[in-house]
Structures are given as structure tokens and as C-alpha cells.
Amino acid sequence: MLIRHAQVVLPTETIATSVLVENGKIAAVDAAIHTQADEIIDAAGLHLIPGVVDDQVHFREPGLTHKEDLTTATRACAKGGVTTFLEMPNTNPTTTSVAALHDKLALAANKCLVNYGFYIGATTSNVSELKAARRTPGIKIFIGSSTGNMLVDEQAALEAIFAETSLPICAHCEDETTVRANSAKFADTHDVADHSRIRDHQAAVIATRRAIELAHRHGHRFHVLHVSTADEVPLLVDHRGLITAEVCPHHLFFNVDDYARLGTLVQMNPSLKTSADCRGLWQALQDGLIQVIATDHAPHTLEEKKLPYSPGHGGSPSGLPAVENSLALLLNQVNQGRCTLQQVVHWMCDAPARVWDIMNKGRIEPGYDADLVLVDLNKTATIRNEEQETKNRWSPWHGETLTGWPVRTWVMGQEVFRADSSGSRINSQVRGQEATFDHARGGYWSTTSP
Image 1 (cartoon, rainbow, N blue to C red):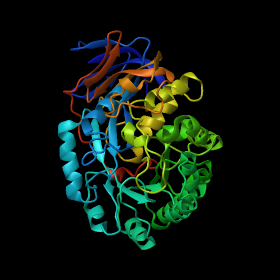
Image 2 (cartoon, rainbow, N blue to C red; image 1 turned 90 degrees about the horizontal axis):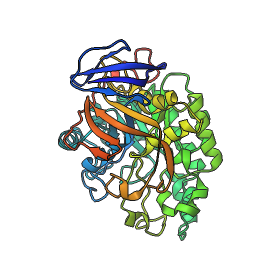
Image 3 (tube, rainbow, N blue to C red; image 1 turned 60 degrees about the vertical axis):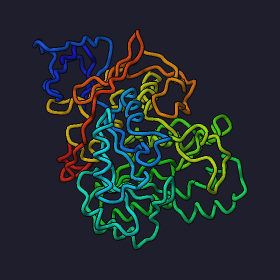
Image 4 (spheres, rainbow, N blue to C red; image 1 turned 90 degrees about the vertical axis):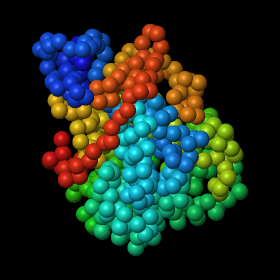
């Protein structure tokens, strides 16, 4: 396949050039390519970017497939320009053993339309499993309870995980003591706005500070998931090459004022914060203190989300779907002048691949995998619930009109999605591949990392 006349987003510049794909790999990037090819694509007027690497998703399989499964989720990925995902371990059963990890990988090989990887989850007693795991991006810790029952809050257990394991660690950081104390104050509430008072700024800051202190003391690479407050940003100034962080679209685009409009649809863990926090998170991205944008795609049925809010069990669950629209949301910001396409590609493609040592992903360079997305920065379309590929067919951005959309997606050189004047089509016969990790590369800050 030869893609001609696109504006190609390379690691350091965007240029008009041609990209040749052979056997699922990028064979050459050169404007002078005039070779014959099985397929020649004229991409004039479009931009070619690497496939998005979403390093935080919850695709619910096994055990919770009424909410989502690997097929529906990866159809949504294909449509959204996401060519590689890394999935969290709080499924049912949880991915807290090497055997469970391998079971998930085998399941994905048969079902995923895009490339895949799975974290292994930490518990208070599974350090031996964490030490034995190999085919994984890293270890996930819930330092604060969320969906599922994987809380690791005891200091001795956290010390053991950081001291005795070698895989990179990421964590959900909300202080459980703070959350429980706040929950007691609002025990009788049914106002979803109180969710942000229960899971408040202090809960986020205490847990993030605690985890970063552990990482520094043990010299362990650590990634802060879904930063939600501007107050956490000063903690991310890392002088030892250990700390990276990410932010999610819902914490960039929604704030506590949106509860009045969207109610429990935007109930999240960590919770939404203020408009000032949104501005602070955008600034942290611009300043390089937050390196990654990931979705934390966490779908529930619309019926579940519309249950009354309750701090206890039985109310509306936290989480929302986002993988289908995350790239378009950021492309719309490019059109509005808030950021550049080069920055979006760094935050969503190159940086997550570097953080997790993913081999041959996140860049358009010879030798890299041909995970590619053509985007039309001039295309305007409206997000509609009924058009979503995610199993639950809803989006908190329903009704929003965005300019800038992915129009073709390739996974390992195979076209998996195309949108044109005749509509959009997903090739459900495509299968992604297991992502491979070389943790000797040393992560985002390493000079040996690409």
C-alpha cells in the first residue's frame, strides 16, 4: 500500500510526503517514492497520523459483557482511530494472576479488531504473581476503591509492591480514608454533585503524593492515571526520570457545572472538578508535566447510569464511554487553536507507547507497525447516541458537533475502518496483534526510548 499526498505527522515535523506499507510495516517515508503497489491511496487534503494508543480502558470482558465486550469495544476503537489499547484488570474474574492474564490474551486474539495489551492487577497478597508476569505493560494498583474490589490501601502491601517488583506501576489515586469520611457526611444524599465533594481535591492529592513518594523512595517507575485536579500538578515535577502522568477527556472538557446538565452520565472516579482545574490540566499538558491523554473508557448501560445517585452500593455506577470520540474531541481543539496536531499525536500516540515501552508503536517511521489513521481536519459531524459502536450506544457528548475526524484506520496495514460519502464501514474480519513490551528501554524519560 502506498499513501501519497498526505500531510504526514512525524515525530518532529509535519510534511507532505508518501508512506509505503509492506507486510504490515512502514517500509519507507519518502516523497520521492514512485514504486508500484497493490493499493495506491491519494490522501490529498488529509493528515496521516500514527494510530492512537489508549493506555487506560475497561472493556469489561470477561464477566461484565452486558456493558461491553472485546468485539464491540474494538469496533469503537477502529472507528475512533485507536489502534492499540491497554486494558485494566478489574474484570470478573480480576486479572491478578499470570494465568488470568494469559486467558485474557487468548480471548483477545480471537476477538479484537485492534492491537491489545492487559495490565496485571495488584492485591494485598499477590507479589509473586506480579514478579512472574511478562506479557504485560505493567502493574495496576487501586490506591482507592473504584469499580471492582481491588483496593490496596495498606502501607505494608504498597511497600512490598514497589520494593519487590520491577514492572512499571500505575495507580488509581484517591485516598480511601478521605473518601470514606466524606461519604459518611453525605450518606443520605441523592445529589450527584456531591460525588465531587466526596471524592474531593484532598482525596486525589493525598493519594497521588503517597504513590509518588513510594516511587521515589524505591526508585520505581510510576504513572499517575487520570489526574483530575490542578493541585496534583506540582507533584508531577519529577527530577529522577520516574514519574509520568495522564489526563482524560472528561477531566479536560467537563466540570462540576455539568452535573446540572448531564447528571449521573458524568459521574466518574476520580470525580469531575472545577473549571479552574480543567484549565490547570490543559496547562500541565502544554508544559509537559502531563504526558499522555487516555480515555479511561468505562461503559455501563444507560439504564444503570440513570439510577439515582447514592454514595453507597446500588446507585448509579461511575464511568463513561469515550474511546470512540476521544481523537475527534482533540482534533476539534486543534481547529479551535487550543493545541496543535503535533501535540495531539504526541499525547495520544507517541507518549503512551514510550511510557509503556511498546515496541514499534506510536510513530510513523520505517520499521514501525503500520497502525495508521487518516484524519480530515475539515470534516464536521455530530456525535449521536444511535451511531455509537460501543455496546451501550450512548455518549456524554451526544449532540456535540466537532470539526476534525478520523476517516480511515489501518491496523498492521489492514484497513479496519473507512468513512466516506457512502457512509462508514468497519471490517470485522481484521484481527489485531498482542502488543509487545521491552521494559529494558526504560520508559518515557529514558534516552534509549525512541
